[in-house]
Length: 434
Image (tube, rainbow, N blue to C red):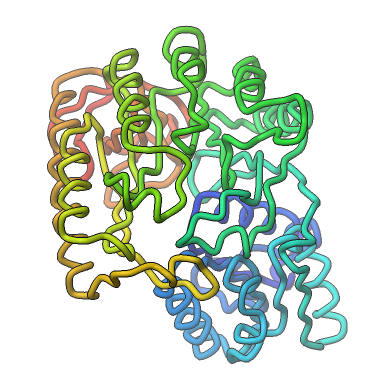
């Protein structure tokens, strides 16, 4: 039983859905140790920062945020984990207020480290070299809202030329279908209605074993109590036609929603990036989804200004993306990462050009999203209403991932209801429960 005098922890997460899932797990483990989550006006004793290092900007934001926490709560012990901590532990340890630095594979030990720090008040650094990380434990935790996040895989064996993730997360690894399904059942018993499948390269699930990602999702589809599953980012070469057809025709619980990284629509740049597909395969996957699931939401990751992306190659990429029947882009200007093969590639794209290209693609994304969302104004779709209530509204997502807001109905939180989509309001849609 936690008392008002129990140690208090504040949590801050950068980066991907996987990081948010892991932070939720850490919070639950600290709660079991009697360390409760700090309320809004309280001063925390522990600050847990789960970092990202996908770009230099991400590193900078992590440093700035850690320094701001040290100024705001000078007596708090700052605990830092995640990719930035794994890649640059000495740099992190030198930041003000940082008492514990824990690598990627040590996140599930953070509760023990915090216990040790509270007892001894001595700084700690625990880092396993990424090449030596082998262990994987599936986890399923509720995020800050209503959806749950099921971690099924970690690490990556792809070594794309621009990416440090294999250096931070280690080699691809996962556990068994049986153990992952057990975690999903535990979540269902705690009221989970929607679960997002997360990992670094989830389509690689089961590598080195007879099991596959397809085996996993078919088994998850049988979990009673969970009404919705969503597949988070999955590589186009691992999203097979068989999976697409199964989601479209057989699955009872997997939503018409896909997130697929493209990174560039020019084949020469894709080769320089060391990606595992070309634009022809990517187009086939998108058109297959659209053919079988006309209502599906398709999000796409895109990097602009990568080394080797000439004006002509960028135009090829822009024209390719414009021709695809997708719903939205997530656009990232290329960022130099130390130790990557991309540093050997020329020409280098000027920063001003990168930002111009990013704006071009963001504008294209806005028009794609408006076009997709407009098709559903006046229609009725099922929405899982979230617990959070802001500005007199409750929010949620349709089956095909359109974000809606409705008048408050707290009794319907974590419930799937039918709503009529009335009008577009920025990136949201005003809706009415019917």
